[in-house]
Image (spheres, rainbow, N blue to C red):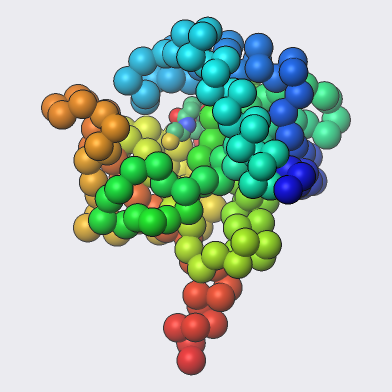
Length: 188
Ligand SMILES: CC(C)(COP(=O)(O)OP(=O)(O)OC[C@H]1O[C@@H](n2cnc3c(N)ncnc32)[C@H](O)[C@@H]1OP(=O)(O)O)[C@@H](O)C(=O)NCCC(=O)NCCS
């Protein structure tokens, strides 16, 4: 399948180009961006992750898209739609995520890009639900979830099995968004 490009008023979610790999390496080495991850990521690991994400997006038609402004070419981050890569009470589930360069924060780009990915999940993939998760103290990311109209039930809070026991970032919150299919089904 060919990776699909999504467009919004100001943004494009598009497939990867070679020059995006270097920008992804810089993004994942930035301590401000990685504040709510266990650590920053080194060049070798980020490069191999980017190559894997690129290949998966091209194979599946959705995944980790590069985020770019329509008015000014160049990588400003990534918006993701992927199956949750571990087992938990709420899996299997499709999750939405975001990681933007600090220079692109504070302009509504994450929310605008994520809304396009959410619509894609509901309309093209015909999913009834999409989840989002982050470590509990990541207020900026939680605000994106709230701006998207996603809902948190504290009973869904969980410990992320990919983070070591006792780590301050292990407790996570889960937010859910329901698609029009789910609403229609529950209305009948
Ligand atoms: C999480 C992250 C994507 C949020 O970015 P963000 O810029 O705060 O989020 P948005 O793109 O939705 O922008 C909203 C902000 O832009 C402001 N804004 C300015 N112009 C706007 C516009 N036209 N439309 C909407 N919001 C606008 C809003 O007021 C809001 O600012 P505020 O939160 O200070 O009130 C970003 O902080 C990030 O990449 N963090 C590191 C990676 C990370 O933690 N990812 C999540 C891991 S699960």
